[in-house]
Length: 296
Image (cartoon, helix red, strand yellow):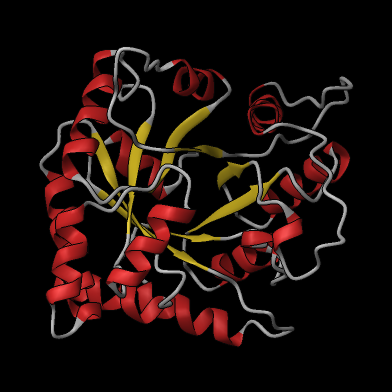
């Protein structure tokens, strides 16, 4: 049974997804308050899995809470914290609770998180975890051959970094994700429509956009200083000089950052092969995303 997100991508509708960092809390109240602000305005809500190696409410538990409150979630699951036994068991539990969209990620190094002495697991690579979820869904079997009855239902996603293709650029990484079971991809931030066009054009030429819904990451930048920090610290992210200049010259940099985000989303709508936009605002929170959605 396809999820609403899967249906929308299959029907070539431009989707909007957004991201919530779950709270460091033993209560779901604040999580549900944030989700309520986005309900009806996005196709699905991503729940991060201890992003940046920082402890938070389990993404598995948080997405189950969203399902119980009629919000379609995307479960983010990393390879960092669990071995294959725990991963398979948690995926079965997610499906049993109605969580069917999942975004598979490698996971940030715990050394940069709030418990730097934590031991990373990385029993599986991200493509191997995708294949595990794919095979559990499609064959109803664990790698050991044990039968799953009934099999879980998953719409599997992966991650990518948009970049302007050059003569050395290859699409084999995206083909590998598609072969591993990915039906959609959500990308890192892209603040340059020319890069998005070049990236999508190559994916479309290689037939990848016919197999995978590519959702481009965007977000409201709060200041020129933040933009420069992203350029220096986030792999694959480039905020153009013209965008930084706009932020520097604005009377209200946060409002200008939201306007830039809105322009990017409107521009992405016009690019053949783009499945949608994924809005992230980890430094500003859900309120900033809501303001962008209201303006759209």
